[in-house]
Length: 631
Image 1 (cartoon, rainbow, N blue to C red):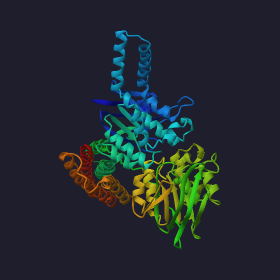
Image 2: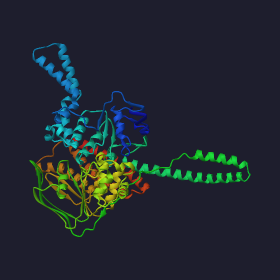
Image 3: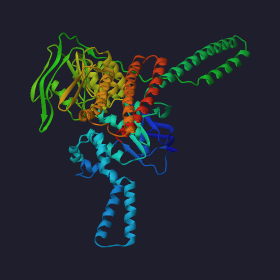
Image 4: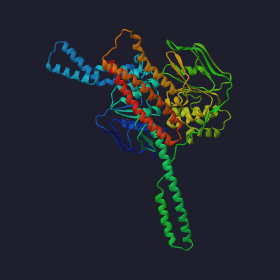
């Protein structure tokens, strides 16, 4: 059954420039589709068309009858005074109507009315209330709130007092609680921490409806989508796989088109030379050759069917690394920080050495950005001391970008930041960061979040530095821009400290993990994959260790034989999961090493997909055995 069908959609916001130009595709019920394309390609515009927020110029859009669609993009406006709890419970509006009527009937029956019609009506409403999950409302709200890190304290807060990221999380929770049939997700992970992102992935994997997601999070796309639709030049291109498959297949198609184009051009060149020779002979008096030349030229025109394939121009810029002589880049001694009654951390003592690449991770609100600002002297510690090495030259990309002159254009801001820089030199440097033409004359205040990040990086990369601090560097960036900054960081050989929820970025660069939780930093001197494996093994060990503490020598085994057998099988299953996860980590590393070798990368990708299926089956088996073992 088709859930969404789009036929020949055309949409423009200015005459002669169609952002969507004959877009055609269909999405079947239950599919998980990733919607990709560069920034400005029309992805969000398409979502707004699907929800009816804006109209289109030509074409047709059909949504399956009776299917409920939910969009997480713009944050709705709620009545003044609404708490987070109120917003979450707006998802149960139809249940609330049933509840109100049932309460009215209860009052009437308590007053002595015994009309059979009234009793039948109450019974019907009770059945509907149970069918729609009315008795599980509290359980559902608690489950979603816990998964998205919406604390009890936050649930009591007024919705208007929340930050943009917190509002996005709450609105995502409300959308999930509405139990829609079609989920449209526009950058759902932008304001989620690792815990909430992974919870959302698991929710989507078990979701029975249709999912269409716009995302620049490559891990997220790999885990949830089974098909990719890319919007390019206003039209759709299709890829039957996740993001990793899309990346390999897109490059293969490009190489194939280029090969076909070059072959065609070589043939055309050969025929053009022959046609020129025939015309020359015709000029010398051989009239018959003139017709042959005309016929050959027509044939050449018919052959010009393949346009030269193009790739997005890559930004070419690198950090200028200054030499560092010494052992300690930064030292933290008994650092403590609190805002009012909320204590972020206490007694933190750590040291950063030259050349290290440290990822600072943790849930939202634990104080990651605060710690970064303290290192940069933008915040002060309540207790303790932070000391930078004497030869440290630091550069800092904050999460929220601000400019000294927001009303000035990009060229003027560049010239103000780098004294002595000419306007032409500023334009040349901006061009290296994909700012060209009239775009460089825009005031920086009107730039998107991604464009502001690129501009700030443009300014940073001109300085000689040996300590680079990045706070959510890939936020708001499309995949091409993320790949560019990753290449720049790869080439930088100084010390790196960064905050990120982008698992691809963390996995690629972190050689050490600082996990901020429970008012302290747990230091893991290892890469992200090893850290994940270590945490997974810890989680498996904990449940197994608890019953042992309670057991006595004389205690008889609990449960029947079936439960005992299930426990034995559970142990074997956990061992198989650990082995599969270790192999998955090895394949991730192999994919990075084979990034430029299409055949090898394709083979590794196939093995990874097969292993993922086995791992999913093992997870399901583990859940079933756990229930059986518990009786």
